[in-house]
Image 1 (tube, one colour):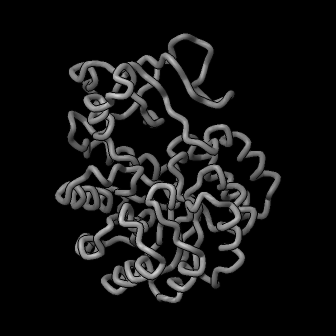
Image 2: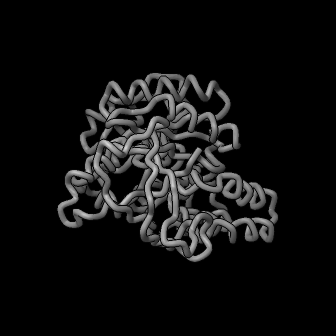
Image 3: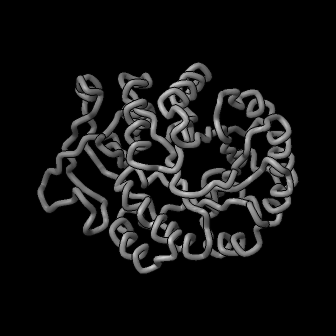
Length: 315
C-alpha cells in the first residue's frame, strides 16, 4: 500500500477527565465525510501518552466502526520499551501502524534500527516510522531509515525531522514505493513540490478542504493552483506552533452540556489574517476539553493565572 494524501492525526475529546467517545465518533465521521485520505487515532495529537490500555482498545474499535472501510486507518503506537510496544500492536482490521522513535532513552542508530525491526517482525501490518527528534531527543538518520526501508512492511515515514535539508535529501534517496509524508505542517507545500507523498497534519483539523485542495492541485501538476490554495492556510501553520492564552476557570465551570469549553480569549498569539482573529478585546471560541488541559489547570505553577491551550476546531 502506498501512503499518500492528507492523513488526519485525530484529536481525542474529553469530558470530565474521561474520553468522550460520542464526540470522538462525530469528529471522525465529520472528517471522513469532508474527504481526508486517512485517519490516525492515538497519535500524540490524540494525547496517546495519557490514554490507558482499555481506552486505547475502545478508541481503535470505535474508529474502525465509524470509518467502516471508507478510508485507511493507521494506529499510533508509541513507547520507549520495545517489548511493550510489540504487546500493544493492534489486532484489529486496520491498514497500518505509526511507530515513533523511542523517546527519553535516546538510543543510538543501532538501537533504533533494532527497535523498528522487532516491531516489523511482530506484525504483518504496514509500518510508518515517525521521526520527530525535537520531541523524542533522537534523530533517525536518513541512512538508518533507508536501511529499515529494506524491511518489506516498513513502507514509509512521517517525517518531522525539523530539518528541511534532511527531508529533501530523503526524498532524493528513498527507494521506489517508500512513502514520505511530512509531519511538519509548515513544510507541506514545499515537500509536495519536491515529490513528497502528502502529510500527516494536525493543522488539517482546521480548513481541511483547503489542505486537501493543496494536495489535489499538486497531484494534478497544477502548481499555481496549489500555491494559491496554500496561501490561504499558510498563516495557520507558522514555523513555531501557536497557542491561545486564556484565563484559568474553576473546574466546575469548564464543562458544558455539549462537552465543550466556552472561553473568552483575552490574548491571541496568532498570525495576522487567521480566520477568527479580530481586534475585539474578547474573541469567543469553543474548544474541546482535553485530559492534559485539565491536568495543567492544577499544575501550571509557573503561570498560575493562565493556561495555554492548543487550537481545536468547532465541529
